[in-house]
Length: 240
Image 1 (tube, rainbow, N blue to C red):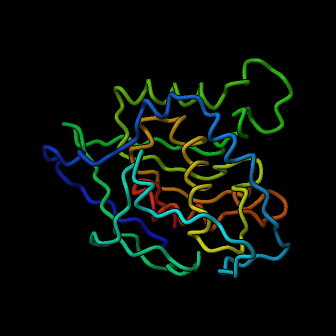
Image 2: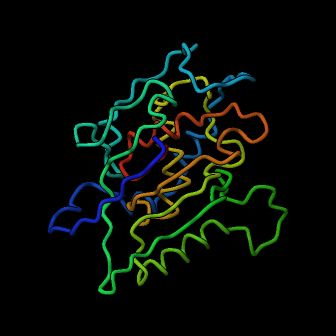
Image 3: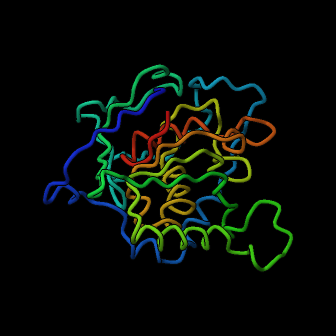
């Protein structure tokens, strides 16, 4: 899915009534997320081509419906919303037609935020290769706060995300696994690194791509297909 169709639509009363991020949950301690992320060990392989592989161990069954909160759920019954792919390259070259509402101001202008290299290492959320400077100890949170403050008057219609979403080596899953592999790990990782950091801004569409760290840094064998798969769980995470 190489192109994104953005439709200019008028905002109707009640159109944003879907369940979105629960700010109380976002402000809660992240101990549970930390345990989820740090308690995972996945065997990886050197050569990865994005194909689905036979999983070597059984995992608890987690349904997409159980992940409805705290975000707006992707619905493949809506026009332009295909179902979860079985391979990360299944929809290559197919246009993503999920509606993105763009509201122009009285002068016909619309604001957009652009962000990249924003993912921090978990569970500390310190930047990669941080060497102790206090000014950057909480840099992801500081930047997120600045974005939230600007959003109060700039009101971005969507965020262009140019990648490096999970440091230092992407999601701790296998690149040989399918996009819907281990959704609980994927969801908890996005909750910790993305939703809890950016709050209401994570309720806006994020038109996203992968960076080298998302592929695994230098080995390129981590869980990048699952970032694509998350686009078919959370309506606002839009990744080709």
